[in-house]
Amino acid sequence: MADHKAVIEFDSDRCKGCGLCVIFCPHQNIRMSDILNQQGHPYAELIDADRCTGCGLCYRMCPDTAIAIHRSKTAKR
Image (cartoon, rainbow, N blue to C red; front, side, top):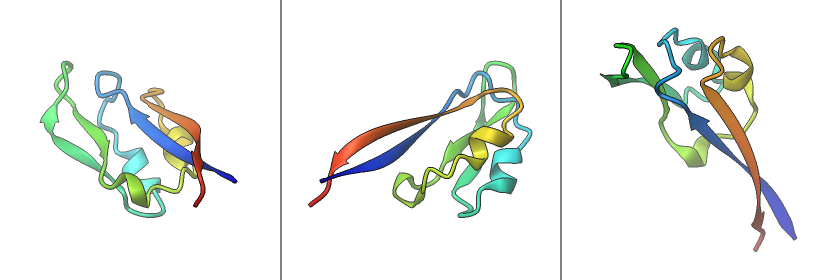
């Protein structure tokens, strides 16, 4: 059997540091980095990939399309 796993990808250069993804993550699993991107903004990053459920709220709330969700099949044991 296969299970679908979501992989969240943040584009640090597109992020403007608004923090909407941090606010709307139901698992409090996104934070703003202490490092600044090329535009001088802190950017969003995932805290723990295993805690991410792939709900997509961060993706839907991001006004800068700096978040992508990729789904992959993983073998279920």
